[in-house]
View (cartoon, rainbow, N blue to C red):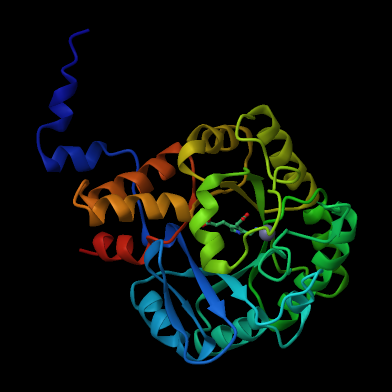
Length: 321
Ligand code: PBG
Ligand code: ZN
């Protein structure tokens, strides 16, 4: 009982040596919102600093991303035309397919990940095909395969199904394998909660459900044991990265997955988490940069190897100082 623990906090030299967690720019995946059309650069009101871009303007964003050393982006498409099934999502000339081709051509070293879902493409805003006012799991799987195949043909590096459909990873893995895309890995949105923290994203991506909510497919925030079951299912079905989403109210879940699975864990620091820090920062109520770094560090300390975050660029700037 004679250890003086403060000895290890005396100065920055010793603190740096005993520090247990380190953020790196390579930990980050930066989300991009790409809207069909021309000459678009629209700031998302509830997400200051985050913009929707059309493809003809995305290079200004990507130049910065690459210059800052960020290695990965995840794409969300905002199509011009929506319908009941979200068929634009598997159009070879659809916005995400075009974006994948463009980015892989102009920025070949950037890892391009595609979110796989339908809520941005359906006129009702739900994450799949409706049947009796609910998303039909197995009909949605049929369309998921089409969407993933279109993304694969466009040259995507990794796909990330986010709709919380049962067997999505299994079906996507099989479809990719059968079509010669064995090398495209799947990051599962394995444990995705039905969260109010997605609010700003739904403005950003135009993907709010026109009726009801997502409680019949996304997880109940009250559940912890179920997270293990969801993650195990994705492992069994062939995912190589497991994601927890949102991050901050679910740090316990991130740690559970880290302790239970021998695969890299990703955490999605979602739009509402970003918006809260930005809003308090703008008001001068918190030191925005410090709270941002502490937040990202907490996600990593909880067990995330990979952090999907709208703060990627700002954090990268601080990390390279
Ligand atoms: C689509 C999707 C959502 C997010 C990522 N993919 C929204 C939702 O489920 O409504 C949320 C991201 C964020 O809030 O930053 N399924
Ligand atoms: Zn969705």
